[in-house]
Amino acid sequence: QVQLMESGGGLVQPGGSLRLSCKASGSIWNMLTMGWYRQAPGKQRELVAGITTGGTANYADSMKGRFTISRDNTKNTVYLQMNSLKPEDTAVYYCNYHTIYRRDYWGQGTQVTVSS
Image 1: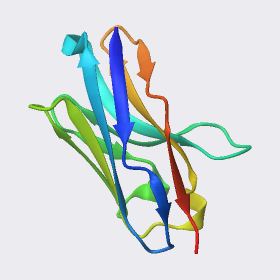
Image 2 (image 1 turned 60 degrees about the vertical axis):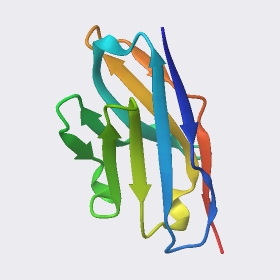
Image 3 (image 1 turned 120 degrees about the vertical axis):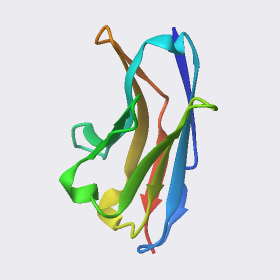
């Protein structure tokens, strides 16, 4: 089993920044990728960004240039730096841990609200 603890959500004004953190614990030897997804009210969950064990990152097109995913292997933690936030970025952000056996673990989600 893998446990994911997210932090860093909150309320921010348009144009502002937030940094999300996700710490993995438990049976974390079998990771393939970690990443972030988000789900806005009435919409499907969508990929925000992911990062492999080797450090290769990928982003959804709408996040490129504004969001940066990174990882600290010593802390088993993945970060999502979000800059130039827009109201349409408002959503619940979920940490995802994807294993080499194609199994997914999810965090409980952290709310990000972008509003003036």
